[in-house]
Image 1 (cartoon, rainbow, N blue to C red):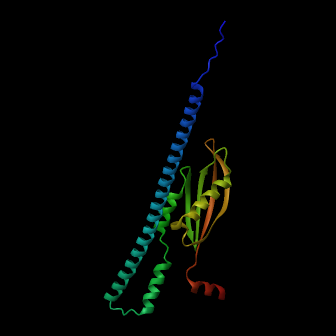
Image 2 (cartoon, rainbow, N blue to C red):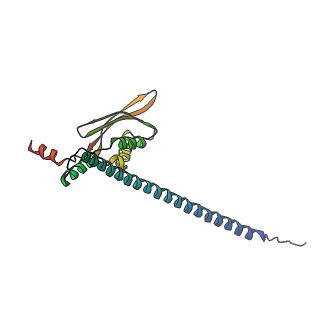
Image 3 (cartoon, rainbow, N blue to C red):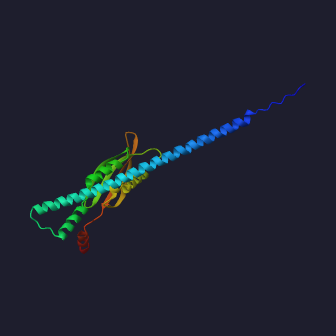
Length: 201
């Protein structure tokens, strides 16, 4: 009787082939991740460039507006001194461009949130709104995240010395939990004369 011993020579080569396939997949994964990181970095740089260009364009428009006002005053026969020009520039700098801020605010609102009331009085902006509450969320977290969005936006947050939570209440509308909230933004008082008058009082 002859005993036959079978040796599978393909077993080792098959294991090596699988190992090589895994390595190849890992290399492709790293390559895709690097490409994605480069794309994200490029997108971020483009966004930053756009923001800087927007600021520069705003300053150019502001300077053009001041120049037009100076030219208009000259045509009226008014002799402007250096002090007059500086005061006019300060006046222009103290102006709050609400159209830009409201446009920025509209872009910052999440899709499941709606603003119900805006009120501005005596350097205080009051924002009221409602937002949907999902089962894994807390009311305050939703409001806090929105406040951080407002603070993080350069266009909206500029001119505000503080943006903070005021109050909230939870309710149910059409079997859906929602939170009603109020946020207050305090403008920077850019007029030092008003501050001095306030201290004297």
